[in-house]
Image (cartoon, rainbow, N blue to C red; front, side):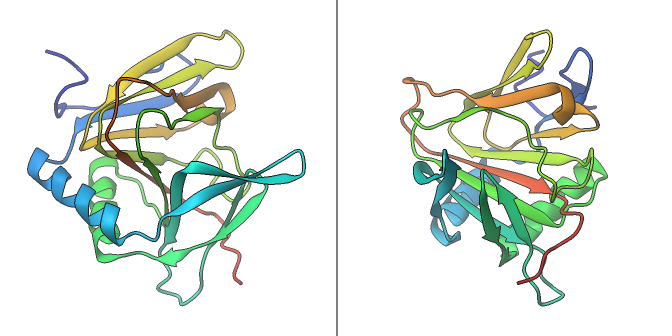
Length: 210
């Protein structure tokens, strides 16, 4: 059986050492995946991502959105790449997907960073998610919709690379000491001409209120 093609009986840790990246396979059916892709594409407040590079603010073609559980009436702030974002309240669709991911993983999440890649020309460079706002060694659950894309990990010391395809409806969870020892990226590709939406559910330790 192709371990990367369907729902697995048990998640597998794709890393050989120094971390845990559990792959669950496709946890959402093809029809439901198509529904959520269309829903997210048309209902999320997508904005070009921003980053401070050598003191200059740049914008990416890739678009992002930052949502969180704001039932206490306050937004969560999240800072990465030198830019702080204020959360929007979870939509009904995001709540439904958060609940599904929590049931699958046994983890709790209070926020979600969404990415929209319009074609394979758009990707993400090597990085690790070690921002101070995040729960230390907390789980980050990555849920994919739309185009299938390759996702890769590289060990910071040994430079060993592990990669796998992420299909629509598939779930991947990074946790433990993974961010300390591994970088990850979404490499660009000329073979993909359709959009991909990626949801990364996270846990903010100390929400900063505006």
